[in-house]
Image 1: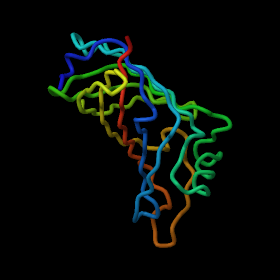
Image 2 (image 1 turned 90 degrees about the horizontal axis):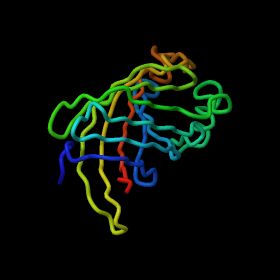
Image 3 (image 1 turned 90 degrees about the vertical axis):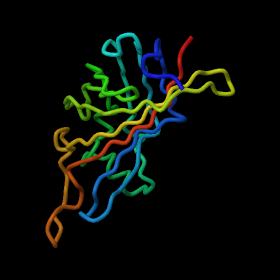
Length: 182
């Protein structure tokens, strides 16, 4: 296994073997989970100076999937993501801070519904491997919490027992397989 300092060059996110997911509290008592199935991204990694690395990701909002069609249709509607007006979510890194031999904080601008806010995502470098097709893959895992209201996603419903139907806080759960480019 290599370390962060060994990562150099251009990497492309492999959406078929990666996950950009989420979880949010529903009715104050349980979590709803899901993710996006269509996204692309590149990372320019500089192991000699990780702070000079750069990551850009574009997510297709209409690829939102929680496993329940009625809920997915509601989340894609104007009440939440409004995929007709805002077809993509984007992340553009602005900085990298190495926090350990295999960990780093990736800071950048997250844009949802034309609302852009800085976010820091703590990541772990899982390692790399050469797949049967000759590709060198590197794995990363990260998690961060955002407030959906910061991005103009404000729909909710009050519960009779107090509280709201959908939490303001949404946890992003990210697992990336990135393929090094020749």
